[in-house]
Length: 387
Image (cartoon, rainbow, N blue to C red; front, side, top):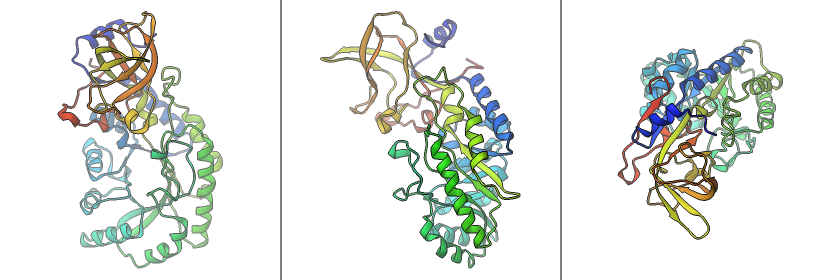
């Protein structure tokens, strides 16, 4: 049973495919839930633009007073252009270029989340040349497993991200000689699509240890940025269309030792926008195989690369033909790559050329990771309030 109404499916059938479809009513409900639960504890939330930088979505997120978490100079610029206040923009990333750092300095952002001693030195130099003091947070590697896919795990010592604990003594000593940066916080992020909340409990325990270390050094830490990574339910997007923000924030409230006056920041992306998006495609061909049939769509890895990149699961529905006898299909795209596959051996109603297919939960890392590979054109986005 599809959640899309007959009227909406009819409109889909008249629209050139493939395209992204955003349910803005669901987005509004998600943002309201997020605001209610984060406000309960006075937590500050920055939206991670890397999940989806669609201007219509950014405007809704900004309108509710959330900040922006950016990982490139262009994301900083997009956030500022959209209206996110400078004091709510944070800039992370292991490889910020000089030009990107200058973008952050010119926009007077809240903080640079720094990941190495050399990065601190470069920011200090560039800030000095502009006669500015750059606010920075140290991104520390807590060596905590996120229990997620290895490509989206970021908090282990084997990962490229963050400053390791054994570097802290020399780093703090170096900070004393850098006159154009100001330490205003600590930053952590252990990974993405985390559904086991015990990973966040482990993170809290590790942050508490770091806090004690800095306290012994008589270094005040006014801001703690605990990152994001809260996962969604890709298998049952309709049953769990809004994640359990209440349990997520309560865990940090219960296990994180917060010092007087400290502000606690979060960076959430996928949990806000994933479920409101679907990739709508049309069946080009049904090709008979030996062990399975191939359902060949007009959407491919150029519109949704997650299955090819992470072997990620997305629920796939035939929304125009729901009553056919069950058949087994490999659902694939038209790209000249064997990895251009959305799902293997999926049992779906008998599907015909021209049927409409919805690939669910694509509001995060769908449109924003699309490409022009094979010289394909970027596809359009449509919205529930104006479709």
